[in-house]
Every structure is written in C-alpha cells, then in structure tokens.
Amino acid sequence: MRRFAVILLVFGLVVIACSSGDDSSDETGATATSEAAPDSSATAPDTTETAATTTSIPTADSGDFRIATYNTGLAPGFVPLLAERQPLVGEAIADLDADVVFVQEVWTPESVSALREATSSAFPETVFPEPIPDTEPGAPACTVDELADLLGCIEQNCADASPDELVECVLSSCGAQFGELCEECQTCIGANVGNTVEEAVANCTTASSAFAYEGSVGIGLLSNAVIQDSDVLVLDSSLNRRAVLHAVVDTEAFGPVHVFGTHLSAVFSDIPYPDEGTWEQEQATQIADLLAYIDSRAEPGDPVVLLGDFNTGPAGERYQAEVAANYDLLTAAMFANPYTDDPEAECTFCGDNPLVGGDAAVVIDHVLTRGVEGPAAAERILDGSITVSVDGADTPTALSDHYGVMLTLSG
Image 1 (cartoon, helix red, strand yellow):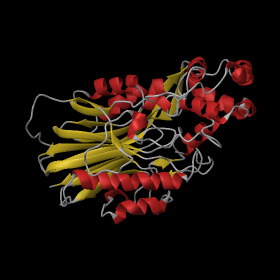
Image 2: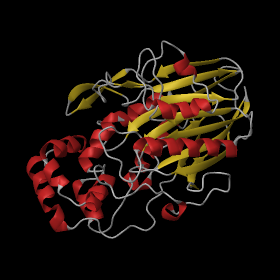
Image 3: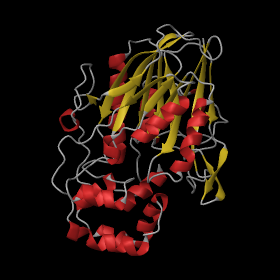
Image 4: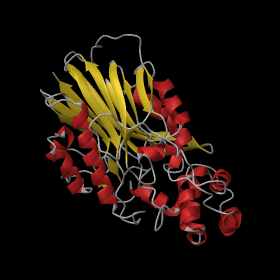
C-alpha cells in the first residue's frame, strides 16, 4: 500500500501519468458483460483448472466452511525477495486448513504456474483471469535521446543494483533525471516496473503502455470444493488493472455460495491522481461497480462472501482507519465483517512487518459476508516470520507484506 506508493513515485506514475484511467471494453479487448453491470465495465477471460468430480466436497470440518484472503506480495519490483519467498508462499498456502483461498498480487504467469503447482493437491480447482494487455499500443512514449541522461545516471549509480534494489537506487540517485522525462515517457516507464532497464527502454521506445505486468489483474481463486461457475468483471483503474472475480462454490454446509474477490486501487497521499478526479473517487467508483456486479450475479438472500485487499478499512482499537468513507459503502450494503467485529483484531498491513516498515497499522484485507446464517469466526493468518538465504546469509523476513484473514462459517 504505502510501500507501493513510494515505488510508483520512483517510476513516475506521479505528478503526471497520461490518463490511463479509462478502462473500457474497447480499450481492453474484453467482452462486455451481459449482466446488469456498470456500463464502463467488462468481463475478462479466465483460465480455470477443475477437478473431475462434480459433486459437493465435504469441508474441513463437517458443517464448517473456511475461506481465506491473502495478498501474496509476489510483485516483481514492488515487494523485495520475491524469488526467495515464492516457494515458501506456495507451501504455506497449501498447508492452510481452508476450503477456498483468494489470492492477490500474483502478477506474472510464472508466479501463477508456481502457485498452482505448489497447491494443486490441497486446492485442485483454480481460477486465474488472463492478463488484458493494451490492444492498441500507442506511439512510442520515449526517445532514446530523451532517456540518455536517466540511463547514464542508472549506469553510473545503479549498475550493481539487484531488481529489488533498483527502485530505491533510482529514487535516491536518479530522481532528477527521471523528472525531466515527458509525461508519456514517465508513464510508460512506470508501467514497465518489474522489467529490466533494457526491457523498459525497448518497450517504451517502440510503443507506449499504461498498465504494469502486461495488463495482469493479479488475482486468483484456489478451491478444494467444486467451482460451479466463474466470471470476471474488469474495473476502471489507473496504473494497474483491477478486476472482480466471481465464483459459485459448492459447499456442504451452505450449498452454493457466491464468492466475489477483488483487489481495489490504493488511495495514495503522496502521488497526485493521474487524471481528473482523485484516488478516493476511483476506489469509490470501483466499490459501486463491485456492489452492482454482486447484485447482478447473486439473488437477494443468496449466501455471498466478498473478500480481498480493498485498500480501505475501518478504525479499531489496534489499528487506524484507511479511507473509512469508502469502507462504509460496503457495510451500508449489508456486509458484515466478523474479523473487525473482534476488538482483539490486529492490522493486516503493518509497520512491524519487515517488508513494510514505518508506522502502518491498518486492516485492509477483508472477508465480508451477506446472507450467511450461523456462527462466524475470523483470525489473522500467515503472519509469522521466515528466514531466507540472501547472498549466502540468513535473512529474517515475512512471507508477504500483508497478513491474511481466514473466516470459518459454521452451518
């Protein structure tokens, strides 16, 4: 969240960005949804791997349904130590005593494949939306001459920087040279975060791009219960593609349950919005479109679980609010949050996480329910420390820059 803001600032998705916020179906090449979804939204293709069985699978405990959200932080150029953490993330998710896990920030095809392979025994059914690249890339955003000063600075000061260190090096050593680039060039370089310097230069001197990771939405669903149906709604967004994944999951305790997972835009305090409007308005619009989509896919009274990294959350005794007015839009739509109902609940994006730092203490990772009868209990998960080897030295860190939340529903 805030770490993401600093990184985007480095790459110039900043005082600038040339209006990449209009994510209509014409631009994405996605098929317009046939449901009563917002006019500006679209559906995207997904890749679904399903088990052979078509009958209801018993949940972990008879009468219980366990569902979790987890932002994996598998974001090249955003969250450090991806290569070292990735196999451990897969193992940890596979070991969860859950029926369904919704993941975010699985941005690359390599990470999707690795996560599917690591969790295939525990969660044989998966849905990961396909990336939605720009269908009509614009004219070259940068010229070689324009990039000369920035590249010279990077070569002089950051030649030995690893991919994890490159952003910080550019921030501290080459910010002035980056700031001299035109707005289109800054935006394109920002959309190439996670690529090498050579790849970014090649991409931006031959075309322009508005979204990172080739238009990936970075979300996916892992399930050991049968997924009866799935659908994807693309949301209007800036900098990164955002979407809602809908799946109907067959559970023993509740029958078919509508699961909606998303990862909404962050609201930055230190980055001007790259178009007319504000980050708060973009997020609020996404929530309005999300709620309309839920109403178009689920009948009144149907069991609904809504989960993911919303980049918004309420205040609690042990954490601060994050864009509370937008979070209130969700509770106003009759969604309950068993996790934040507990006064002992703790932050899910926290400054004491070594991958975060600072004074962050917010709950932005949620599992919300509507129309679900029976007791509900929630807990923070995947919040322990790990040790990885970096250049031959043991380095303590965390699985991700987020902690997860698990909800247990008892029928």
